[in-house]
Amino acid sequence: MKKTLFVILFLMPALAWAKPHPEDYPIVVHVQSSRLVMECRSVLTIGRTLCTQNLYLNVLIDGKAFGFKATGDDYQYVLRTGAYKAKMLNDDPADPDNPPGAYEYRLKYEFLFPDGKTRKFSVVSESE
Image 1 (cartoon, rainbow, N blue to C red):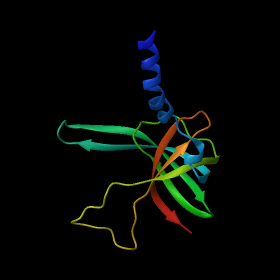
Image 2 (cartoon, one colour; image 1 turned 30 degrees about the vertical axis):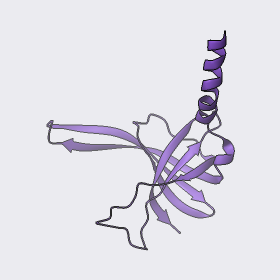
Image 3 (tube, rainbow, N blue to C red; image 1 turned 90 degrees about the vertical axis):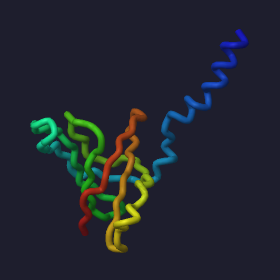
Image 4 (cartoon, rainbow, N blue to C red; image 1 turned 180 degrees about the vertical axis):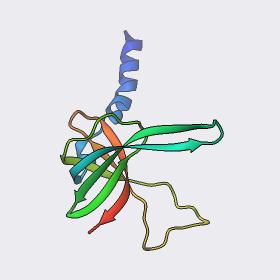
């Protein structure tokens, strides 16, 4: 009994930490459009062409327009338009041999969906 209680008490902080908290997602992203795009690339080492279906969004954040690309998966579904909670992620450190100019940036956002799932997006365009 004591061992079971110890295991439960030991795991509770890890379980609480694993669930995203809405207050950690302060940015409201308005998804205006969502589309799936098939993208293919040749892989010379295996002599084949690999294709993935990528998810692209047109969004507004504080009245400014951006294009987002979902990272990491082969997508089958478009994302419904509407408002989603998000947070900006710290990006990988810049390449010291080729740092970005003051006129360039690279950003990633993480969306929090109503069911508690999250998905990461990279900014791929910006417009006024």
